[in-house]
Image (cartoon, rainbow, N blue to C red):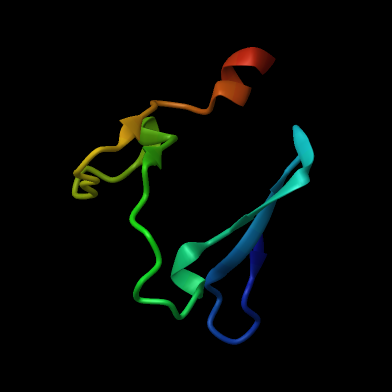
Length: 69
C-alpha cells in the first residue's frame, strides 16, 4: 500500500499475485461525477456500517484469493 506523505491516506496499492495491476483509491480523485461501483469485493472484512446499494455484484473475497488457496 502506498500512502500520501502529508495526510496518510491510501493513494494506491499493488497486489503481489498480480504485479501488473495497480489499484487506485477512488476517494483520492477529485471527481464528484466518478461512476458508482458496480462490484464490491472483500465484503467479509468490511465494516458493518458500510452499505453499497444498487445494481452491484457482491463478493466475500477476491476470486484471486480463492484460486491461491
